[in-house]
Image (tube, helix red, strand yellow):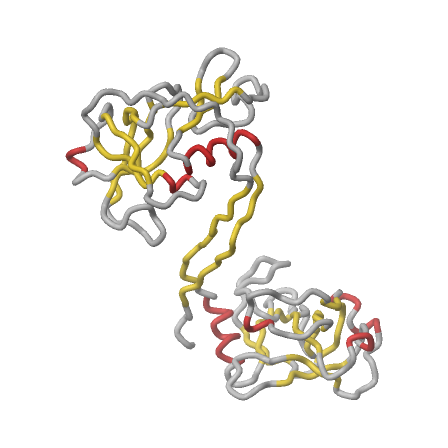
Amino acid sequence: MPEVLKAPLVVEFPFTRSLGPVQSAFLSGLRDRVVLGVRTTDGRTLVPPVEYDPVTAEELRDLVEVAPTGTVTTWAWNHEPRRGQPLASPFAWVLVRLDGADTALLHVLDAPGPDTVHTGLRVRVRWAQERVGAITDIACFEPYDGDPAEPTGHSGEFEDAVTGIVAAARLDYTYSPGRAQTAYITALSDRRTVGERCPSCRKVYVPPRGACPTCGVPTAEQVEVGPRGTVTTFCIVNIKAAHTANLDIEVPYVYGHIALDGADLALHGRIGGIPYDQVRMGLRVEPVWTEGARYPDHYRPTGEPDADYDTYKELL
């Protein structure tokens, strides 16, 4: 049995969102070194501001400036900052209630060590040198032993207000396909396709999952399937994939579910070697490999007669 595979993977994409009037004013204020909150009907000032009262659900629009100084209400020390976090050296995550606010803002505190941080610590905003209308315009908080700062009296109106933001969403993790799919991937390197047979219902699943999804029992018996198979269902892709090198394929093209001979589950693959408008259910296909590839590049027609519907209808 080959060693179970594992590999570092990254899921990353830009997340774009528009801003309502309250969030627009808040981020526009940060760009201009002003911290704005929103006042509720019972007189509370919420920072960061929200568009609806979390207690009464009333719409909120009454913007009010608060001071860039405040008090730490709770904190946690971060010994090992990760990629993309606000500071590269160890820091404290803090909730800071700014002077004039009734709620706390989550951010980071630049402090020499955890022994210098405590609830009740007075802090102030350290502004970023370059500000664009984002929460990162507050570079961090820093300890402060002076008097509370006074708001400037900003109205919350901006001629060039920030109307949208783009945030990079990213997830770094280590993926392991497990025993069953490790064997499947290893076989593909030899241009073979293997599944596993359920000891109860005797169905062969490709790719294997390590257990039968119907019976719930473990699977271990390997079965080589294919290489030929039958197109069960398909779709025509008309939108070109963006920023994905391994899908740089001219549109339109066809992606389909293919039931390999001997398998009881259809896998998906691109179908080529035939005009896209001639692909059909029942089409018999075979894999096409490229030099050095670890999986088939696409499937092409074998020239055999189409499979009878009754032979694959249970795999739709």
